[in-house]
Image (cartoon, rainbow, N blue to C red; front, side, top):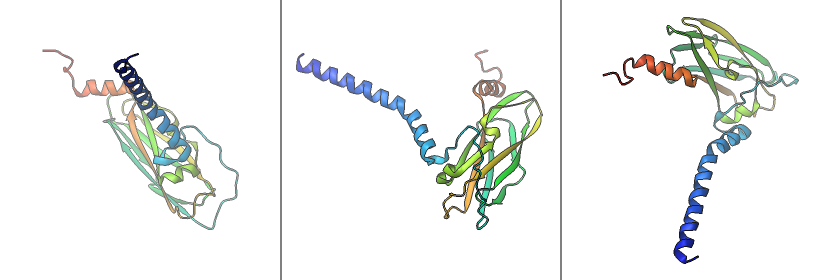
Length: 188
């Protein structure tokens, strides 16, 4: 191999390696966030309650924030915007979904936790965020969130904020875009 061919070969190998690395970054980042709790990522599967004594010596304020993203015409509301809980204490809070559109739609609530380190000490036993939700036109549904902050939550964490953002599922997003822009399908 002459020097030019060797340089081209090495450049192609470097290019392929860079592409593979860039392609692998998203799943690697997700795994990293789940393991370390960085960026407030939480488990999307039901967990079991830790059978432990409740730490009645302190309270932690848990705040709930709800919002709709990407134009989903739903309202997500929570019965209490904040609660005070003891670490180790199981707690149930009810959320209400309302579909304000004229058609049945599916959506998903994507959770995040702040401060991000608290996500490692949060156990969700029952959560609407584990599955997609489908609501008929004008339908309102109440769903519970059952959670527990474990006793080993660091002492300097006095407030935990859970944010739930609603997004349409992929096929519903296309349907919503078609409703917003009727006649934009190339009709002249």
